[in-house]
Amino acid sequence: MIIKDLNRLNKKVKELCEKFINECKNKDITVIITETFRDKSRQEQAVIENKSNAHFGYSFHNYGLAFDFAVLNKNKGITWNVNKDKNWFICGEIGKKLGLSWGGDWKMKDYCHFEFYFNINRDVLLNKLLKGFDANKLS
Ligand SMILES: [Zn+2]
Figure 1 (cartoon, helix red, strand yellow):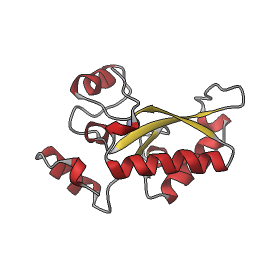
Figure 2 (cartoon, helix red, strand yellow):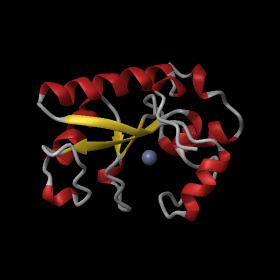
Figure 3 (cartoon, protein in one colour):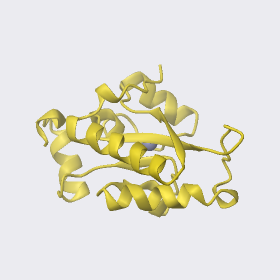
Figure 4 (spheres, rainbow, N blue to C red):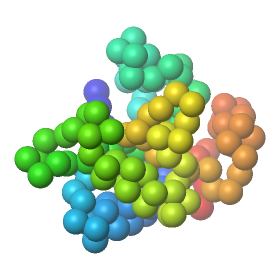
């Protein structure tokens, strides 16, 4: 099941997500949040559907530290070819200014995706999470 509820995000990440939506709105860009938290069955389903190459535990979605968004075009649809809608890149910059890491910068492009590391190195943080550290304690 796809969860879009912002309340399933870490508190700080929820705050950043809300700021992101508002700052996009300030630039006359409407974004929708398409997914927040992913449980085990949803994560493995995402792998099968080629929406993720991370098995459960290896995606920041599994800890409420990532969210996916989409940019609405003027027809209220989504232009999935990001090169045909510059707003994807404007949104990427908005999120990055808030301190979020944007999937659009990755080698394996994931333009819909943001995640947050709390000023911790990504691999160090992921290792802590894999060892059972509670992501809700991050603030
Ligand atoms: Zn994502």
